[in-house]
Image (cartoon, rainbow over all chains, first blue to last red):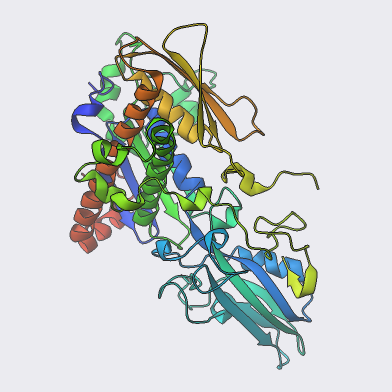
Length: 343
Length: 133
């Protein structure tokens, strides 16, 4: 029975990968409850750290587009975020403003000299060394011509020269840091639990699915569909199988998005545990009893368990202005727009 | 202009604690926990895990205001353990579940990669025909 009593504790979560592509993962998560699956989905959407351009120093801009307009476009360019653990959050870094441990600098310099209109692409961003690791900060280029996203167009004599500083961040702060374009999430495709209430005039299957019934996920649970006829409604049924379809933007591989999502969730829980344990026995024995043996692997070794510096350290660096116009800066007190800093 | 900073949603302020516990004086073995800079992601997760414990008689959470980045979690137990112990137990269970999930996903992903190119060719031909297990 599909929605029987859950024995989560006996086996733990199960995964079936249905399809895998360089930018997509279609998988099924089984033997967990709805809250768990949804938390994973929410974490992967909004709290997986990636790199994105956050500061732009405009040296020259004679294009038709305003500085901040181009700065915004630059921010949205996906940058490789492989092994982003090597990068510090700027707010946690010891440096004054930014440095090679907490940022990657990309420069863009283009001038149109011909009569043709020139396009400036993401490939024209030059990544400067040193940087935290060999991948981080590379613009993601997936088209066959190897051009990447268009940043702006230039007419004869127009020039853009900008220094872009990419930083680590999460999509909760700004969507440019999102690792996923979308995450498909479905459970109970035959609506046996009646969590959905389809609007219909005569036949919901005919009217709501446009002849595409059962859908892909419905096919998976085909047997249960047949049982549904005439079966009494089970009030205690809970969903336990979740269909995920994760589409990456390209900055992280889809499996890395899942793994990072899991890690972020563990860090959240560890932060709670640490706080609670700290209350009665300072630096208590949490590490010893809860996370023995294999569990430690998932936590990147017992040592940094619970020490989610990124979320606890107060930021002290002055300097950076926030990305979207005018807002007070997350990292300090420099007034917006000062000294050629745009963005 | 007066919009709150976006980082307010996930960075603890100066001296702010992640979790605070306040015993519910009206009923024995019950506490109200306030989680700062957290949302439904953690709230619902903890609530549902707590409810699986046989010693927890009540667990519920709410986000009092959508613009205030906190949620409160009320836990009542049958007295054999404190609400705080129950909460810690649930956190540990979740962390180990997540570790299992991580290993499981790595395993399945590697397997899928090994099947590799053959499977991908299949997928292209079979789009829409249903699952290939």
